[in-house]
Length: 75
Image (cartoon, rainbow, N blue to C red):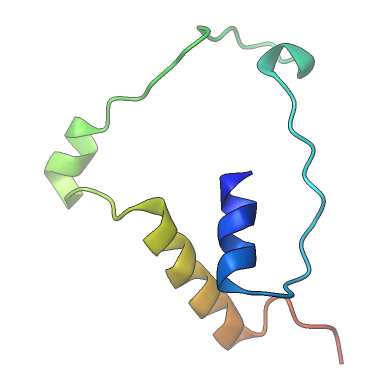
């Protein structure tokens, strides 16, 4: 839900899809996952450097999408 709020802050009036949050228990999958699984990204960061904050990456994606006409009504 934080991403949705960030998009609304950056793009007032943007048409957004409805997102309904569910718990892991509410989404049945064949894979078993621990209650709290955190990925260690240290090997990736050693190769390519640390990632920018997600808010910055979202802004870059929205800017690139706007240049391509994403999110605009069809003509």
